[in-house]
Structures are given as C-alpha cells and as structure tokens.
Length: 329
Image (cartoon, rainbow, N blue to C red; front, side, top):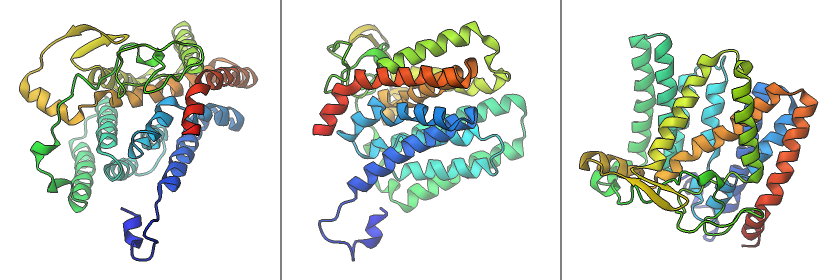
C-alpha cells in the first residue's frame, strides 16, 4: 500500500521485499530488546535475550511461505505497549497498532485484538468505569472499522471470508518440541511425521531448555514477581490462545487423541481463523519473554548473562540446519 503512492515514479520492476524483510528482522530484535530492557535495565543481557527472537524458527519459517505473516514484531509491540506502565495514551497506541495490523495481515489483527481484550478484561477486575471502558472499546473498534473500510475490506462478501480448515490447520500439543515443518530445523531432535505446517511452533533446543528453566525457577520461587495480579492477563492469553490454536481436533505427535463436533454457527465463526495454529504465536513469544525475565530476576546480572548466552549458543547449534537451508534458498 505504501509503495503504491509512488508507483508513477518507481521503476516497473521495483519490489520492496528486501526492505520488508529487513524491517521485520530489525523490529523483531529491537522491540524484544526494549521489552527485556524494560525489566532488566541491562543492555548486554537485553541484546543477548533479543537474539532468541531474531533467530526464532517460527519467524524465519514464515519468510519462505508468507512474507506478510513475517511481521511478528506486531505481536511483540503489543506486549511492549502493555509492559509500559506509565505510557501515556495507551489506548491510542493499541488502537493504532491494531489498525496497522489490518494493513499487514488480518491474522495479526485477530491476535492483537484478542490480546487487548484479555488485558482489558483483567483491568475490569480491578475497577469498572463504564464511561472509560466504553470509550476504550469504541476507540479500538471505531478506528479499526474505519481503516478496514477505507482500504477495501468490506468489498469482499462476508461469506467469502469463511474457509474450511478449522481443526485441520491447528496446533499439536507437543508443537514446541516438534522440529519439522517443510524441513527439519533441529540438529539434535528427530522429525515427527504427520504434523501440520501451520502449527509449527518449535522453540529450538535452547528455547526448550530456557522454558524448562523458567518453569522450574517460577514454581520454586513463587515470590519472584512481587505483584502477581499483573500476571493474570498473561495467563489468560496463554490459556485462551492455546485452546483456540489446539482446536476441536486434539493431536499429540501427529496422532489424534480427541475430537468433538462443533455447532455449525461456532464452526463458521472459527473458520475465519481456520489456520488456528498461528494463534499460538503470542504464547510462543511469551515463553521466551517470561523465561528470560525470570532468569534475570533469579540470578545476579553476571550469572544471568552467562546462562542466557550458553542457552543461546545451544539454540544456534540446534537450529543451524533450518537457518542454513533458508539462507541457501
């Protein structure tokens, strides 16, 4: 859309794909850095932690399939907005971000609106202010609908937005340890047959060890977060997005273990997000963010840097096959 403004002066064969890829890589790393720095105030630790996001298998895997779906920095920007407690006009930032996402890919709009709504519900638990709450929702939806109208979303009949596939393009329960999509990403772990491409959510061996470390530290040190109430919306995001991503057809290592029929009305609504495996991305990045922050809070700055650096080295070695194949292609 941006480059169409200059279509009269740009060469006929001009393309912006390289520029777009650069933007996605840069913002992916930079926004991750800002979030981690917001909690750690340590530049070196934040840089090292941000590299987990820069080398994310889920991100890089998308560049070979859907360039528009490589804008994972939009999800990270949502977490960044929410992490800034003293950010002025937070609702305006959310409204602008959600509307911007509609110009990239509607799956990001669904993800970001879902994130905002769960943060919004968590705020309602503290205090209900009907006037303020209504204005928040009106601002978000009003700007989004206006943006969608201006850029032609409603030129497409609603019935044409429904698609078969909810329950097929889904997440596997073990997706974070399944290393294969169209290629095998892991140097250490074997491929698992019969798993869908849309549910690809491999953390990498370094990411898996990071996640395990974060879980163990959290449960052994329940007071690591002073204000536990702030964690509620993040737990809601993990639960709700994981359930929708898993769908009504539950599988483990590619094998169906449970399935149930959905009412047709509900199936029609969910068919808008038929590739439901993509909705796991906020949870995927929360795993990295939460584990990195927990490690920093538990250990001294020096030891935290050593631990995260060691895990990053393990990550790079493990996902090297996937990185190498994407580089060569």
